[in-house]
Length: 116
Image (cartoon, rainbow, N blue to C red; front, side):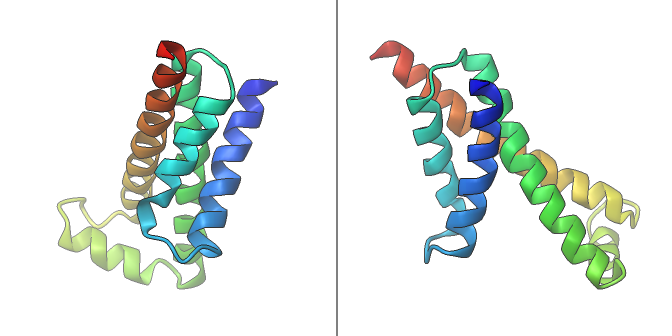
C-alpha cells in the first residue's frame, strides 16, 4: 500500500508543482525526495515508485499535448533529432528522462532516511 501511495503522490505532487507553483521545472525532484524520505519503503521500491510516478506523468502529458496537435510538432522535433521521425520514440525518451530524474530523487531520499 505504501508503494502505490508513493507512486500516486509522486505523480500528483509533480503535477501540482508544475502547474500551480511558480517554481522551476525541476522542482518535482524536491517533492519526490520528500516523499521518499517520509514513506519508509525499500530503496529499490522507492526508486521505481518515483520513476513510475514522474515518468508516466510526463509521458501522459506529452502524449496528450501531442495528440491535440495531431503529432505535428513532435514529428518535426523527432526529425531534427536522430530518432527517425518517430513521435513515439520522442515520447518514450520523455518518459525515460522523467523516470530517471524522479527515480534518482526518490532513491536519494530513501538512502538518506536509512542512514539517519
